[in-house]
Image (tube, rainbow, N blue to C red; front, side):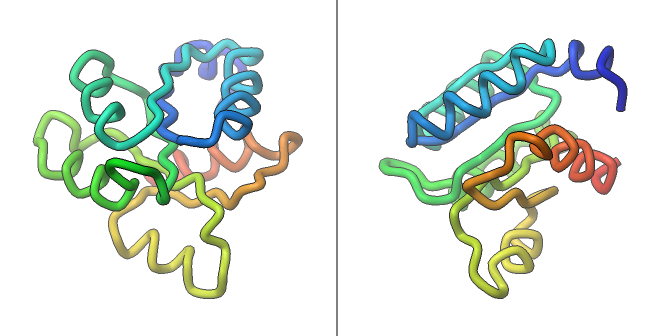
Length: 130
């Protein structure tokens, strides 16, 4: 994926931790992506009614509606079937990645993520999806 492709990205980040959102948003916008942010799954679902993202970065543990439930609801909507959803999560114990992928996520990035490999990690998830 080229830098031009990143300028075409529209990204939805759903995460309740401001520091994680801030870093991810800065890296993505610096590289030309348009970024939209929601603080929980309910806000994320509302945002997806307004924005058709290239992909979603979705935290798993959030108040009001967690990432697991948001994923289930997004996958139940035919309009959003083709949108890759990447788990961006602190769930990084043995077996967590496999559980995330089995649940229907299209990729997995553990937090804290590395700034120097963040875009490459996203691109790898998108390559695996497409």
